[in-house]
Image 1 (cartoon, helix red, strand yellow):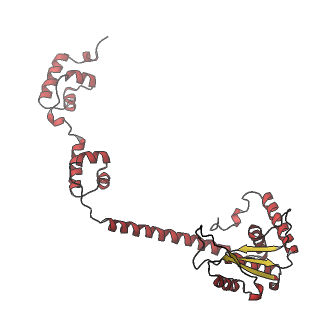
Image 2 (image 1 turned 180 degrees about the vertical axis):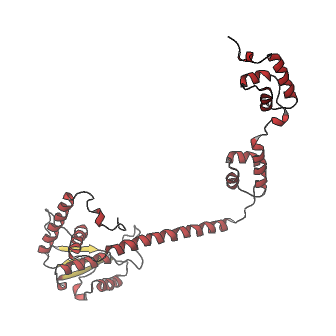
Image 3 (image 1 turned 30 degrees about the vertical axis):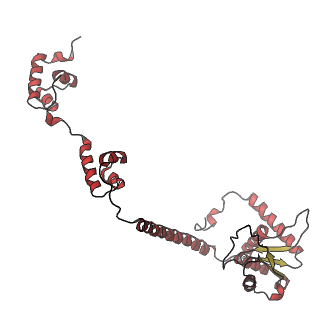
Length: 298
């Protein structure tokens, strides 16, 4: 089988020409074009043993990066800044500049801490603004409650926070306890909806003995708008010196217990209504009415 070089006239003569051109300083591309050799294997055989001219040798690609990294380090740049500027690894930068002195700190630790604190405070302010915006939009989306909506809401609130009858402890009475004045106000509005007279209501404050008891009593009396005669004796929780209280400060006012006199029939209506809600929720098609709920809520 004929070798690929046989298609060229007189291979040795061609090699002499290639070597001569190489020694004149021509590159491989220039020799290939001058001799019309389009096969790299043949070109390699023609130039075998002949070193490339100095001008065709590529410099080390990292030499310039190394020089630039050292220059920047002497200007006081950190590894992070040099890495971003040059696009090379920190390990390479460390090798290139390890003999150079570390840049002096331009800020004291206290100044750096103050800058970081200001940045964090700005982030917290932005988050709080977003939080308040979401809450405000959701509150405005609720609008006015219909009597049916208030009725169902009151049943749910009571079943979550009110006293319940047990098979082993028959207590068909209405007693609602909570520390949130908003919950108390909604429950009072629910009782008004059902026509429960205010003179059937009795209240009792439950609070830690080391808190402002008198202040809490005045506060809850203003919330419910009831006279002192409607309040039972305040229940005090004894202090355990081995534990640390978390419910402290001016905002702590304990809990308020709200009882309805002669409330057995009302309790039965609450319990029956609650299980009616449960049955309705069980039979409701999944996500069938989501479109009716304002998007700002869901």
